[in-house]
Image: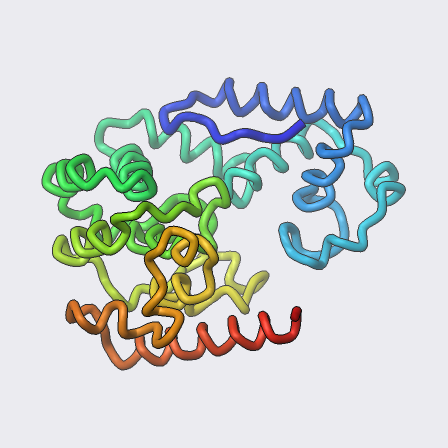
Length: 253
């Protein structure tokens, strides 16, 4: 069983159903389910969703067992929430009219779809969205989603008009140098801190595949400098990110 993305307005019952289906698939011995459990189980050794988990054996998983609470935690983590409680809080906020959570999630959907008119409408109705952060564990801004990296995997998409999307966000007041926050998870994933959008673009395969990072590959800050969207901090982060990416490709080749 593979966990699937759910619509933005999904109620908690749909997430509970995913947890029950995951538990059923685990008990049936489904191999794909074992992979998800290996990566996201809350009681296995190593940091979840990292290479730490690659050496965890099926026998270790069976010894740890998978309870309903574990399955719920796995579902929450797959959707990029630190815990089931964090997911429940998010779902509750989505249903509140005085909360920015639903507009933020709808704006993310507009960004990854390249729906500029929808994004502009949301920013006009909620100007504070430009500086708002996700309720998910990475606490990304909307601009970070343009980087198609370090956010929820199913949302790492780069539309053909990604540069225009970024322009709309920056004109609305998005902070060009904003880092991923990670909140309480900073101590668990120190290497993920300090990620600006440019650094994320430079190390993600999605902008390149979408035809939006050709110049960034040669000089990452160049893609943004021509439009006045840069600072010293941003250029430095972009150069470091691109250097790490080149070294990684060289090592793997």
